Image (cartoon, rainbow, N blue to C red; front, side, top):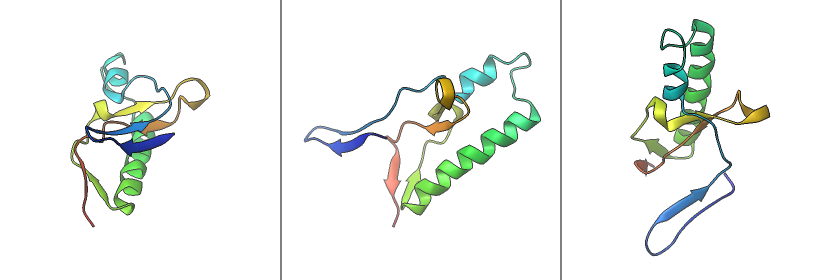
Length: 91
């Protein structure tokens, strides 16, 4: 994330451009699902992102495949969390 803040009207965060979301990637697969090894790698990264968010005192109330996307180019193996609109502080 490059910057985050708020105005009188809304909250915002600015991050790098990312590639397709996990749902789009999964639907592009021949059987509309990830291989077992890909599913494990995806699960580890998405759970890591959620753990970091929880450790910071926040709860994402909209966890779904469309809210995680892969990076572009050399970052295509990195999964990014998107859409924090329903995220709330819990501590």
